Image (tube, rainbow, N blue to C red):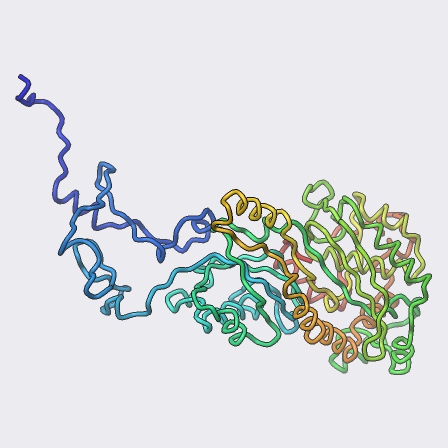
Amino acid sequence: MSGTKRPHEAMDIVTPCEVTASVAAPAESTDDPSVAAIGAPTPTEVTPTPTHVDGRSAKGQGKGKRGGPDKRRGGAREPWGRPATDGTTEPRENSEPRQPKRKVALLMSFCGTDYQGMQINDNARTIEGELFQGLVKAGAVSQANADSYKKISLGRAARTDKGVHAAGQVVSCKIIVEDPDIVAKINAALPPAIRVWNYARVVGSFDPRKACDSRIYEYLLPTHVFLPPRPKPDPMPDLTAAAAAGERGLRSTSVQMAERRAYRIPPETLERVRVALHRYEGSHNFHNFTIAKKFHDMSARRFIKSFTASDPFVRDGTEWLSLKVHGQSFMMHQIRKMVGLVILIVRADLPETEIFAQAVREPKLNLPKAPSLGLLLERVVFDSYNRKVQATATQKGGEDERPPIVFDPYQSDIDAFRESFIYSQIIATEKAEDVFDSWLLHFEAFPEYFPFLASGGKVLDQDCVVRDSAPLPADQGEHENELAVGDDDAA
């Protein structure tokens, strides 16, 4: 009969206990960066909507006195009207007001002296560690998230090693930016050697390392490194004296250092440097310019857009050169080994054609690594990303426009910072410690460490092939740290 239900007809029945179980268990919140990376809203931005066990939305259920938010107090409420808490006996309405976090790209500069690198590490003093504490002090990170940097999804366009500086670096994070003076407050909470120039709002899926098209690094070095070598037949007396003085490595006398600082590079030597740097341009296999890479590892092949040398300039009585290399990405120590090889080729008048031909081939060679002192990240480039956001803004008629990630508006401030904090630190350290001089004297005293270079770039026998690239004595501690850290996209 039309008005009579069949005895065995299935009925959609939701029991009270099922409703209670489904509504009383809101969607689990998470601070997992992998969730934020795909654009999911954070727990501070939305209130989860409970559902019935059959998948139907519970929106609209329990309205009135037992349902929605407590409008009289303005505080959030759990299902069935219980006051929300933070896991304590105090209601959440009495704690810190919750503000939305936004995914942003911070444009910043820093001097890496006295820091153990860029990437945050619980057991070391790092740039990101200082940045996180500054964000907390400035109110860009809430006290609820101040206990862990993982809650703000830190990311970086390039990782820099111990002592390496940056004039133009980008760090992504999820922070509170409602305060119009937030940039000034962040800088007030940071050491003077770390500056944030501005921020750019980005989409939740933004990854600075992947969105970055290319990177430009600068290497500052004194021109006297290109002076011809002075071989020392017996380095042990100097090594004994250096060890007794608590120094790592060899040192020239004060008279010798005065002569070196008075050196001015001839035009023909400068041209030789530029020709040697030009050899790196293009796509090559750089497995010999890093650690733990095999010749057949495709990740060892990198593309170098340009490698140039500036005109010489004098600072504090010493002549310097600025080398700039522009590439898509770099491996650990790649730039330092590229610079180190050019220095030894030019100063020893070695045939660069044969040297480079062997350096990018399969045999494993021990190549010199220039000091970290002179290396800095000039800037990271986001050309493709900027074109994409511009095209999106055009399609939407200017709505939801996101700013490009560029350093040009802050270039004058960046140049002043680089001169005051980075260049001055490099030059002062070299004057006080003779870092480049000590590094070069090791090659003169221990030529057996680089038989490949001693042979003029010819792999004559197995002595020229290095299966475990042995470090110089002055590099021993750093080499041990490299083996512990491993390989990464860094210079």
